[in-house]
Image 1 (cartoon, rainbow, N blue to C red):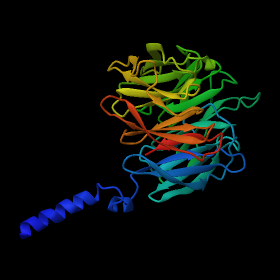
Image 2 (spheres, one colour; image 1 turned 45 degrees about the horizontal axis):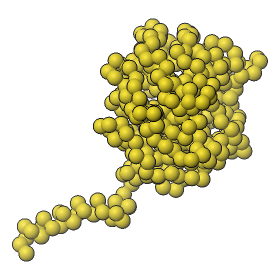
Image 3 (cartoon, rainbow, N blue to C red; image 1 turned 180 degrees about the vertical axis):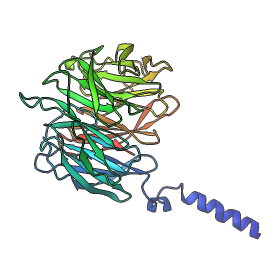
Image 4 (cartoon, one colour; image 1 turned 180 degrees about the horizontal axis):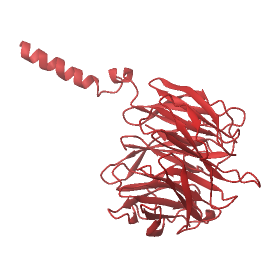
Length: 376
């Protein structure tokens, strides 16, 4: 065999070794990771699952948050979030009124800080650059719901921002989520029991003004996510009414006003709660906690919504499951759904062209009451 042909053979062999099952690829660093937390009452822990090139998950590593959970559902979205650079991970400790932060390492996590949340029963966090806000769902007389701000440094340490705590539209609102708009200029909060959506304007100091309060298009506004061009997509659980789940879309105006685009599109499923949007803004996915399913949505250029799948069932999470939190991997190729009743994570492959889902795997072993999911 000529020298040229030998070189070609060695080259082909090297390529094949990265593609064949059981080859050298198994020894390469993980493609990314998925994070969730136990929300346990004695000691809350974050679980880290390395994911392979297909998005499948391995066995978890466990890291103490230093705080406590509640052991029960928090009725929330964004209990566990990564910052934009995937350097810091933030987790709520709803049972001890604290927030924990971790440095994200190639081989796991390193606890960086733990701090009081600025209120009672933190359920959701959002971070934009060096600014973090916590949503506290106090829900008791004299300990009302609020949002509270923190400055974070490059080592994921948190410092309370003086005079940053602001009330919601009322006390006892059963709030579900707080999140910065993509430009960092506003904060949005959903309130389940009042059927309100509140917006706050972020000042250069990091403090906020507001709230500006808007009536939700549908009943029980829950989770939300942002699309392109200032679009806001909000799930509506309809108080858990059978087959009553809906999703609405809004335009977020520069002054914080919300302009309705699509009003309460029916998923035909039950308890539509958590929302994520694809990287290109063309698709959205919502979990239907009472229907063991995920609904996919098409999002038009102008923010109009339509069902991706007739009947509203784009993905099935499994018999007896109650899917709650959702997260997309950074590349948008995998969707992860947490079930906090049977203690599982369902793994789906996303078709980037059609938006359809193919189930790849179910990971078991999480405790009942687990909460929050984030992926990179």
